[in-house]
Image (cartoon, rainbow, N blue to C red; front, side, top):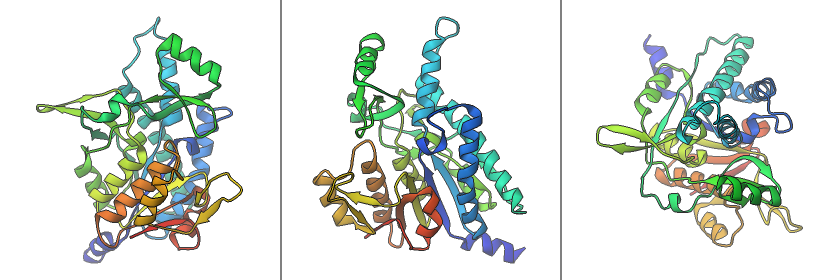
Amino acid sequence: MKMGKQSKNTAQTVVVALGGNALEDSSSPTADNQKKVIEASMTHIAELISAGMKVVVTHGNGPQVGRIGLQNEAAKEITPPMPFDVCGAMSQGMLGYHIQQALKGELNRRSMAAEVSSLITQVVVNPHDEAFNNPTKPIGPFYTKSEAEALERSEGYVMKEDSGRGFRRVIASPKPLEIVELATIKALLDENITVIAVGGGGVPVVKKGTTLDGVEAVIDKDFASAKLAENIDAHTLVILTEVEKVALNFGKENQKWLNTLTLQEVEEYTAQGHFAKGSMLPKVEACAAFVQSKKGRKALITSLSKVNEALRGETGTHIVS
């Protein structure tokens, strides 16, 4: 028993943040197709667990929570629509269910007696955060400019262009201050249970006396993942995206892939406008904040298919002090 306890305490803890767009088939976002995409994704996460790491999986929910919102709007004459914090909790449950099921199935195929648990997670935000006056977080599907303008007129949505891919609805994205279920996450990790938490950045809540109230917002999952990684004293934060490495002048003739990014370079390149606000910028900033929070912490950005190679130092962009 003592040997087992020691193994629990010395295993490296890795927080792996999956993007919401990577968890679905955008061409046909049915439940069956979402499940298939997630099942394929979990082979890479299972590799980390097989290597003896403690893993916390976090995930985005932009496309999924956007569609839940659309379903609410479409059915409002039949049944009352749910507020956006409830929609966020619904997306956590849906994605957590599929991730939990797929990862456990993959571990079973490897004959590993490892447990997986998804947790509806609330995250405290400041009700006076300036983000509520300047919505920036893209959610839901992409639209053409004319479609976006029509939605602004008919629904009162705030629509913004998203990294050259089209227009999307945006809502407030306040910074995460406190993870409500932190003690539960730590207790599960102490029992070597793989945890799925802060889905979609966590359900945004504000403190009102002794209670919590949900608010209309989506917390950036990268910042929430960094906050969680810091709070559980994780060894490494891994943020997964569609590209293998971060680039300067992305998509241009003089594009340059980066193997490493120092904290000073993060500041310089951000000031020069190299990282898109709705795309790479929060990932880079979240990694920098985690690395800066304590000596010895590591962070990297890479693609899902390259996560194991990146953790071995063979690829990815590593953020260093």
